[in-house]
Amino acid sequence: MLSLEPSAVGRVALLAAHCDDLAIGAGGSLLTLCAARPGLEVHALVLTGGGTAREDEELAALADFCGPVRPEITVLDLPDGRLPEHWGAVKEAVSALRGRVAADLVFAPHRGDRHQDHRLVAEIAPTVFRDQLVLGYEIIKWDGDLDQPPVYQPLTADVARRKAELLAKHYPSQHGKDWYDEETFLALARLRGVQQHTRYAEAFHVDKLSLDLGRGR
Image 1 (cartoon, helix red, strand yellow):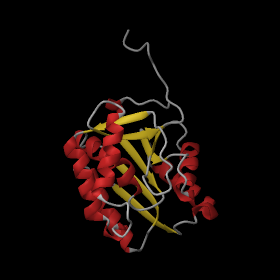
Image 2 (cartoon, rainbow, N blue to C red):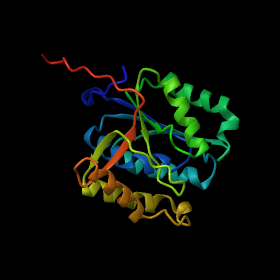
Image 3 (cartoon, rainbow, N blue to C red):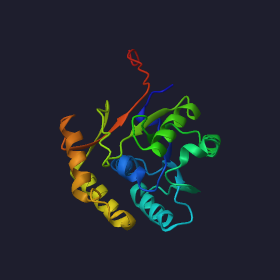
């Protein structure tokens, strides 16, 4: 319960409020994990952007981030920026994903995120995926809500650069944001790498993590 044995990860659930959240917060980890486990099952739920150009961006992006795995991707059309007003619909959608996917690992936003949509998904995720390890990814933005995460996934230089390139390639709708560029994404990856003695890394928050220090004796 709430532990992670890498050899046992066969199914992964991805939760996001918006198209590009997953790629920003966990894109390098997805590139790493899916390349190492081509038989992995990946199921993604994105709550906003359905029926728009953003959905097309997300489908193409996650296909690249998860290659050679072919992810199952659902993009809903709930209103961007107003998810707390649709708490019931969000809970129902996340519960439906849980009902059809016995995930071994879950990626979701983290509770300290200041964006109301991200925070709602972060609060609901562990109430639905109660017996799975939920890794809360961070999304860099102007709000200045970066915290000090306790969990790190090292990224090779190639993976870190590939993540930044794919973000630039697949999300042209975001290019008008003054912070949205390859330099930003590499800068955060470099900072997280410094904090755990590698060149690059992604970092995650956890609410609980179970240890089994006696195993193998």
